[in-house]
Image (cartoon, rainbow, N blue to C red; front, side, top):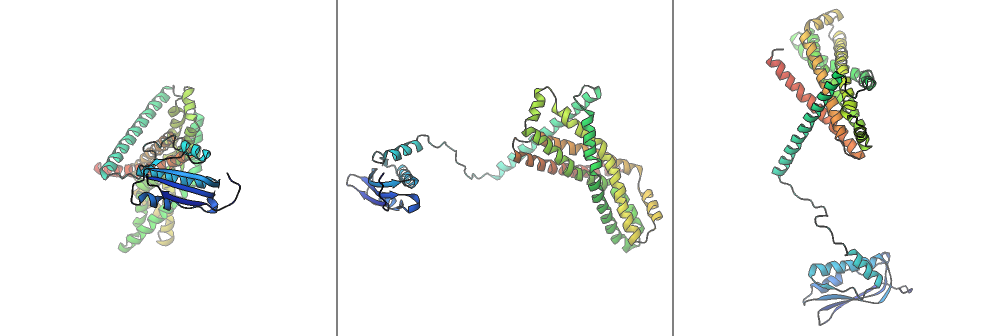
Length: 380
């Protein structure tokens, strides 16, 4: 390469034999400014057939990647127009780089394309994904039932210490958020009930409204949703991180069943603790209604407590406790399932956590609606 410094020059001429001669001179440095490809493209599209393209680099000085870019653009133009590309007269290093760049052709369909998917295909794919997800959930439930049977027989790979630890994390440590949310729910129910019932002179029945709504529905469902966002997400993150670190595979290598060792303690802990949290939530929510009624509706504490005890039946109370235990199973299964289905990177852990919360809340709401229909059919 020449050591003289001069601006890049480009001359394009076409011979009578159909050869397009591209003459390059000066320094072809990218940051110093270079001629564009327009002159070459103009000659290719002008009247008269061009059979081949050749280069004259006798006057070429210094060059860098800018020259390579120009030559590759010329190569693409020749390829798209079916013209012979002659690189023999280029500098040896440029010719070698051109050869290397074209040595391995681009793999077919390697480039991403924004393919349009029909509505029918999207519906079909969604249906297949839903069916596969339901099958995976049923399989996971079956594995837990078998693990529970082995636990009752005393043959499960199960540590009680793990269950007690999870019980503390999802029980006593969750009392604060459960109390706050259910106190607000009780206040809201009492305000709404008092606003409507006072119009008919029946504000005393605010106690009945808060008691029945809390014990049958709101106490258990709000506790389930809170634990789904708190404990279910934690289960998914824990097991997902273990999946990323290949700890689940390590358990299987040592002959330890991950469902028995990891999932079963979490499910049993929630089955035990969620009904107790539901009782606590009922008391706190009724306390919220008590505060509103005694401070704003001039209802005496004794009368409010009497109306509450009259409104709550054993059936309603046990129904709320049963639904709480069921919601605990839902939270444990969805959280652990999404964690064990997690991918092998950090982003997958976040997706698994999000999916666990969304799936758990959806199943809880849908199940509560189904319980309402069944209870209405059975006159409970």
